[in-house]
Length: 265
Image 1: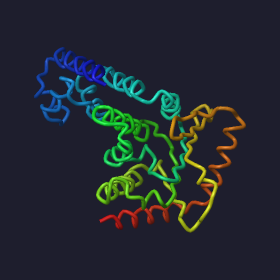
Image 2: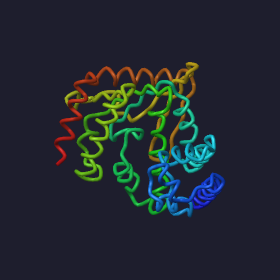
Image 3: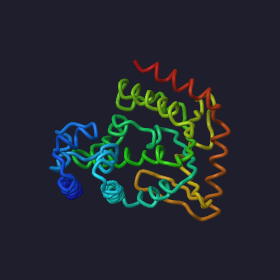
């Protein structure tokens, strides 16, 4: 973590100096504070994607800082997650089912932090690093030629108090904001009234590339697996069709999310 922060800070300082800008002048150009620029340059704060995008453009370095951030994301991610992140980033279409939690691409920082801190296995810089990795992956929902993403979640995802009421309200506010601002993203909810259904066996995701290649991803307590064998992918797709068939229509699902948000006071 420290080596990346130091390297990024040095690259930013060099690019800023070559552009003939002070920290204050760069801060003004990118609508951030000079303190933020200083903290990143000195390796005290991890750069966000928004910050990196703006300084990269302001300094005219043709994506150099963004590429450094992307490389760091890959390096920081768990080894078994890295192949899936590549599939996720290359996908034209993503289908994702979660029976227990809000999907990672839709999580707020507070919600992600509450989940990743469970059990005390991660703390301090390591926790910050994994939270950043999760949040940085969300850029795929807002890229040029956006990813078409359909999520199915169980109603319990709206009702389980991850991080407490304030975190949950902020999380569902964020979910509604994404749905309002990104017409290429859809969330459908499987109501508790359904009872037992195929999705209770566990979460999974399916990515379809622009060339039509399909891979799936399944995760457990120890690691994650990218599924590529045709027969196995076909089984995951059958599971998707089953859970999608149990879910509510989109507009009804949005209303349930809104009601869930209002219940957290």
